[in-house]
Image (cartoon, each protein chain N blue to C red):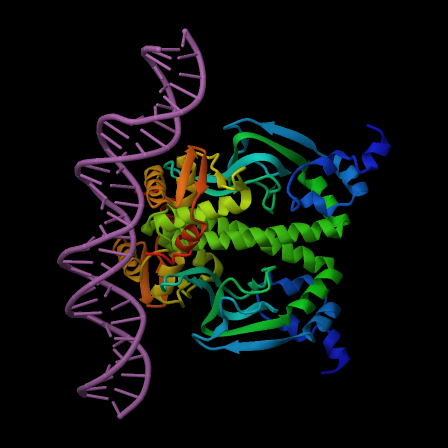
Length: 240
Length: 240
DNA sequence: CTGTCCGATTGATATGAATCAAGTGCATGA
DNA sequence: TCATGCACTTGATTCATATCAATCGGACAG
């Protein structure tokens, strides 16, 4: 690629269809050209691990397509999924030397990878990137604190309703008939480990929502929200 | 106070006995003098509210003495304490206009308060402060993620053991006889709402630890850890 | 001292979700 | 087309923790 192309609007990062919130959006075109030369693309298929708990944390990642789960495993096999990462999400806030959590792809996934040292050089030299990184960390913190409320004090039905709302907000889309569609690319077991429940309970609560005509299943991995109000009310713990 | 005093090692912020991790430590003496003029001290007594859920978030705070609880209340009264704040801790990472959580003093408390706009001016002009703020936010995020594991997947006994370890690390001290002392200034109900349990369960589990000779109570608000290994093993979910 | 109050403890019982145990149904390959 | 496997669903039962209900005990006022 010519230098001209690197600096143009045709720069590959500019055509990246990742969400507008991706950290690299904080960089202007010329900086982006430099930045891009630092990293590489990474493809993962379903079930492949990006890193394990305890691995050295020497890279940062930006998710461009697919979904990744971030999780901890306790000594006896209990698992807690700390976050599902969607396109535009960033991995690499940890200031420690090693990853406190494992990361694994759910389905095909593409990421941009940059050496953490290099990334930090950019952060030091481009205040807008530092600012964007801080804002993302603060936003993640707020999300994590909300999740404490869910995990500590909500019932199974409330957790699931909240989960569907969240996914709808982050990855939901409209069908051609205007249907409120929510993709569930992760397994019931993954949802359970995200919500602090078992897969059986997740399954049962989905059935309840279905029977209450609040949702409708198009397939195992695609549901439709028929009653957004109902979901919202449940998620807030307002309904009985 | 003379300008000379403001710039000297005798600057009041320098004699502040807050932990070395306080954000203001990122500022040098001269900057600190400017910074100090922006804010004020705030004293709260037991049970006083610093701010409510939904209040405008126009100030940031640094805790210099005492303990504060940060919590959410659901519509039916369920409560989740998201964090206990100790001296050196910072409040004000939220990027939203309003507080997502309420903050209330547990016992007598002193805080430094700075208008958020002013604080942000300092952040923009002193990269070391921006860096320190980011690192604190990232550290809080890691703590929050660990807490998801606790709240989602640990048993009552594990949660309590982990809690005692945490408090010991943050606020524990040695008795004159070398005893491993842990202050518990918050009520059993507060501990319960922090751990996603009830006060009765907290009380019972404390009794179990006492009977197992893992801890000893000096008073309601001061316990001694007799068997740190035991506590540690339980906290990790290693013991039966 | 003594009574009162309020948080903590302890006990009895209830319950939501986990666990254990079959099915069901869809996708995949022979 | 049919077997095979796997994830999901559904049902029966158990269990950890919540809830309900007495005490207990230290702090404090009178």
